[in-house]
Length: 252
Image 1 (cartoon, rainbow, N blue to C red):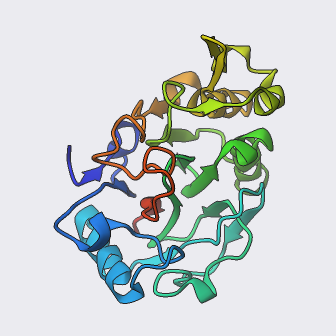
Image 2 (cartoon, rainbow, N blue to C red; image 1 turned 90 degrees about the vertical axis):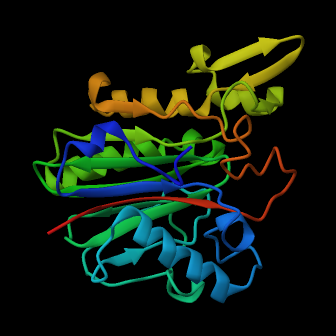
């Protein structure tokens, strides 16, 4: 697998810069890009800078990350400045979706099983990154982010990518959690008395219900648990500290 994952839906847009990092044992901590998990911060920042080189982000690009809290809080980035990149101290607080129409800025989400979603409207020049664990999915953060893009920027031709995340093949959950998703029976599997939940599918359905066309949605179809040699998986690794990063932005 390539060291950086890119997506067909976005590759056709010359002004869209995007990518998802993957594990790489040539770098510190298997190329984790998380500052909040206790690893040496200087080494993680080094990894982050290498990731920018891999996706071809020019040196004048700013990057905005958030302190993700499994919320449905959505923040619009109106200033071209870097936040949460070299330190957690200035990351956007209590937020799980970032939207921007600023040029030369990347917004991103760190994950290790939760669902990362990247959104792009080439006509309006708007990009967004979403983090959807089961709590965010239950709160319909993907749906709400698309609706916010429509409300604020009048987006009506949004493309979406659902990046690597844990799949229904590996995401075993209890019956009490399943009750939160009874509206999505097609995303629930009941096998040998065990329940399995398809979070990527639920988020895809939420994107469609918000008006994103079926043909505009790309599913990576990569399970982080099944592909743990390439992606961090909190569940497979029983509490790993590594995170991979999915980003998107607009080149000027």
